Amino acid sequence: MNNALQIVYLIPLLPLLGFLINGLGRNYLSKTLIGLIGSGSILGSFILSIWVFLQVKDGNTHVAEYFNFIAIDNLVIPFALKIDALSSIFLLIITGVGFLIHVYSTSYMHEEKPAHFGRYFAYLNLFVFSMLLLVMGANFVILFIGWEGVGLCSYLLIGFWFKKQEYNKAANKAFIMNRIGDLAFLVAIFWIITRAQSVSFDQVFAVAKGEVAGRSFSGFDISVITLLLFIGATGKSAQIPLYTWLPDAMAGPTPVSALIHAATMVTAGIYMIARSNELYSLDAAELTRNIITYTGLATALLAATIALKQNDIKKVLAYSTVSQLGFMFLALGTGAYVAAVFHVMTHAFFKALMFLGSGSVIHAMGGEQDIRQMGGLGKKMKITFWTFVIGCVAIAGVFPFSGFFSKDAILLSAFEKSPVLYGVALFTALLTAFYMFRLLFITFTGKFRGTEEQAHHLHESPLAMTLPLIILAVLSFAGGFVGIPAVFAKGADRLGDFLKPVVASLPHAHAVSHSTEYTLMGLSTVLVLGSIIAAWVVYRNYQQKGATGFAKVLENKWYVDELYENVIVKPLHTFGGILKNIVDPKVVDGLVNGAGRLVNYGSRQLRLLQSGQVGSYVLLMVLSMVLIFGIQFFLRK
Image (cartoon, rainbow, N blue to C red; front, top):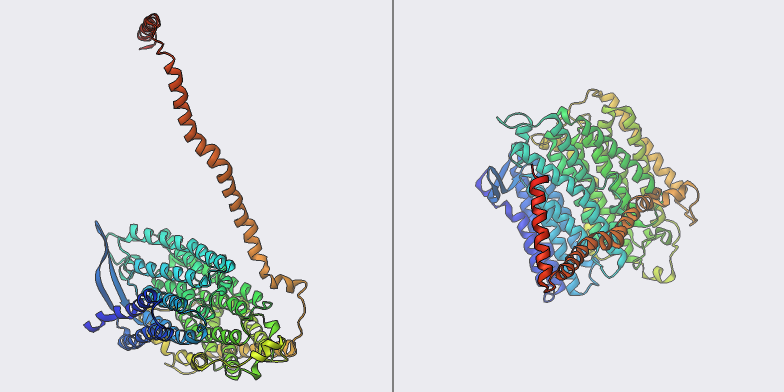
C-alpha cells in the first residue's frame, strides 16, 4: 500500500463538511445549492471509495493513524482508519446507494421550506459521515463513535417532521431501544480493554488467538464478549426482541427509510460481527453462534408472517427488512460471513429500490400509504412499476437476479448446519416471495380504489426520482453476478475471493455435493415461483375486506407491541409514578426535610436551657459531674 492512502480521511470528511455547510447555511442557501452540496459531497466520497476499492485487491490492508484519541497509562487508543476488502465493500454501498438517495431526495423533498430542506440534507450528510466512520474505524472505539452517530441521526431523521407527536414517539422509541443494545456493546468494549489492554482490531484478534505474550482471553471471556457484541447488534439491526422500533421508524421521510432503515444503518450490526469474525470463529464462541443462528431464523420467520397482512406500503417493506436482516444473522451464526456480507450488498440494492419506489407511489398518491386505497398504478407509473417488479423478483430470489445468489448462499449454509434450519429458512423465503408480490399486485394491478382527486393526481415521478430507480433496478438484477457459486463455474465467486483475506467462512461438517446443491437451487426456485403464482391468484382482483381470526393476529403484528406495552412500559410507568408520588416526596424529601426539622426542633429545646437563672446552671453542672464520675467508676473498663 502507498502513502497516498493517508488521505482516506477525505471519504468521511466530505459528508461532514456538507453537514456543516448545509446545517449552518440553511437559512441563507437556496434549495438548488443545498441539494448540490449535499449530493456532491457524497459523490466525492463515492469516487474516493472506488479508488480505495481498487487499492485493496490481493488482500492489501492499510491503517492510517492520525493522532492519539485516548492515552491513559498503558492504554493508547489512536484515531485510526482501517482500509481493507471488507470496509471497501461497505464504503461503496454507503456512498453509492447514499448518493442515489440524495439525488432522489432533491425532488422528493422539494416542497419543504429552504431552512427545513437544508436541515434535512444536513442530517443526511451527518448520517453518511457517521456510517463511514463506523465502517472505517480501525478499533472498537472509533467504530462505537460512528455507531452512536448513526443512532443520533436516525433519531433526528425519524422525527424530522417533529410537529407530529406520533413521529416524535417513533423517534424516541428507536433511540431508547437502540440504547439497550448500545449499553451491551459498551460493556463488551470495557471487557476487551481489561483483558487485551487494547481495542485495535488487529491487536484484539491476536490476543484472542494467543499470539500476544502476557495477554489472553479465557473461554468465558470470549463467550461473554461475543454475546455482548451480538446484543449490541440486535438493537441496531432490529432482531428479536429489539426489532419493534424499525417498523415505527417509517414515520420519517421515505428516502430516509431507504438510506437508513434498508441499505446502511440496520446493517451496522452485520458489519460489526463480520468484522469480529475472528472472535466468533473461535470454539469458545460456539454458544454465541448458535444463539445468533436461532435468533436470526426466528426473527426472519416472525417478521415474514407479520408482513403478510400489513396494509401500509412502507410497513410491509419495514417488516421485510427485519426478515432479511434475520437471514443475514442466520448466515453469521452458521459461519457463512461472506454470504451475510453478500446479502447486505444485494439487499441494499433491491430494498433501497423498493423503498424509493414506494416513495414514488406515495408522491403520486398525495401522501397516501394504505395499499388498500391504491390499485392499477402500473398503468400510470410504468417506470416505477417495472423497477418495483425487478425489486420484487430480486428479493424473492428468482434466478438470475441478485437475491437468488445471496439467498442461495445463506440457505446452503443453513442446510450444511442442519436440514431443519434449511426447511424453516426455505419456508420463510417462500413467505417473502408471497408477501412481496401481494404488495405488488394490490398496489399496481387491478382497478384503482382511491378517490377521484387521487386518480386525477396520478402521474409518474420526475427524472430525479426515476433515474435512481432505474440504476438500482440494474444493480438489483446484475449485482449477484459478483458472487456466482462455485457449482456454476470454478473461480466465479469473485466476492468470496475478494473478502477471503479478511472474512473467512467456517468449515462445515456436512459439506454438500454439486448434485445436492443443484437440487436445493431447483427446489427453492420452483417453490418461489409457486408462491408468486399463489399471490397472483389470490390478489390479482383484490377486494378490500376486514381481517378476521389468525389474519387479524398477523395484522396486529402478533400483538408484540401491546405485550411490550403491558409487560414493560406500563409497569415502568407505574414504578416511576410510585417513585415520583411516594418515594420522592415521602422518603427522599422526608429524610431531607426531617433532618432540617430535627435540627430546628433540637435547637428550640436547647434554647430553653439558657434561662438566665444561676441556680439552674449550678444544678446542671452538679448533675454533669455526677454523670461523669458514674461513667468513670461503673461503666468504663
